[in-house]
Image (cartoon, rainbow, N blue to C red; front, side):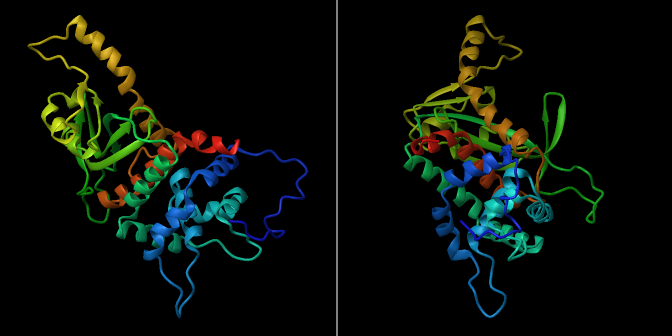
Length: 322
């Protein structure tokens, strides 16, 4: 996307200029995101030009939606950021000398379009297909884990009640209210190939079959996945069941158990890095919207862009000499 430049966004008069981390990040994402394939995916659902005001270009709206995911922006904040930051306008292809930024209502309507047609999950699948096509294939090992995303527990709202899609759960001695993200992580590339969301009170082990693709030769997980050998064999017959072992009141962990847990944790802990990126780097430590479906759509886009593409961007850029 190379729009004509005007004095409104020209930087030729700046004598001293240093690329910022945001500019470098956007330049990388510009090159690794499969724009053509994603446009083709969404185009059948996007409004066509008719008698009314012509719609904003599809790719432009898609780029704005991706900025929201990368920089943790609400609809109004996305509009404000585009007016404020020249690097974001350049990424989207907006020239303030010729046109305004799409308003927050337009941005919101595009997000609702993706939610209505379940396009977040299809974007996730398309990105994974793109990575496989580029030679970043799924290995035969999977690491399963889940993380809690907090939701507001207050009832000080119009309905005087909590979000009915969210539930409470206890972890250790602490109670949490919100939802869970369950993932299946490729052991070698450290990209997420399967993802399921549930209320927070659903136990991690109940999502085992939904996270497997069937060709695994090894399944890793923490002690929450103990005793799921039958479910794993039913979906992936050749897979070894390799969860960490948990001690009980009647059976303490032996020295051999502790040594085995230590070895398994070196592999299993890779999934924690993915959750760290999503929560700390890209800011998804709390739910963004009310209801599980809206948050699920957002999470699929977030993990497609901010974990999968972000994790392997150097492998995708390498053939071009970057």
